[in-house]
Length: 299
Image (cartoon, rainbow, N blue to C red; front, side):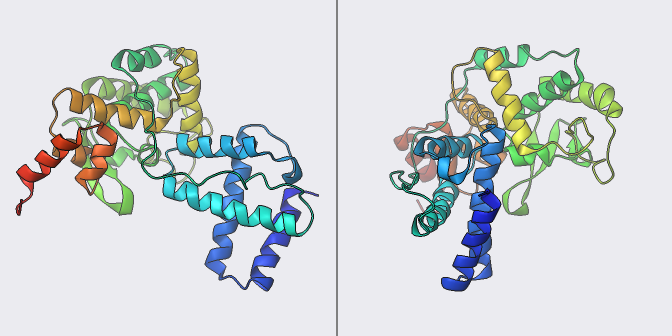
């Protein structure tokens, strides 16, 4: 039986027998869809009955590499547990592949940080004689130069580039706008892409303002950026677990190590709380406490 038939049966079960609200039903289905998305990317053509615990663990690593928050990962895992419990109840499965997996914990190990030579090495392996190589160089330069989230990168618009003064206008979480500086090297490669590569793309309707496009002329996807970063790291011989989020994390870490002000880094990353910035920057807790004491009006 196909995935879709099992999913339809599960949907009927939680709707008719458990009387869940429509929002809850949609959340369960989105969690299963995300798993199917991973299986497709990993080129795993397997039925639900063939899924193992290792497959689920690999799926969680995939979510982590995409920069999906641990709270969201925990919720997705909870949704999958509901699906597989249903398959057990129906005697479709004999064992539950999710049963022994613990939910991700907040505050667990941070992503690997690239050293500056490793960043340089990744950028150097991109073939600028190829159109996709020039585009990818511009993307990675922007990620490292401005510390963008992957969603912010793929949503970046030409109308929000202020390269003459060295700034990007970014639409961040909660639709909050911020201006982020962009470095000289990133500006150089972004201009090369915009002036010499992008005009040759078959740009589709309503995609004209997006900076980074795929070969078909549509806005590039999160997953494609994720795969480009992975492939580039492998080509450069980087053994670390590298994702687009790694560039953001490296951006913040290198700034702090170079003596940048914590509040300036907080502003560039688009964090509401300075304690969130601390997670990205490996700051000593005593230094963080002193910084808050120095700047908080009632300290």
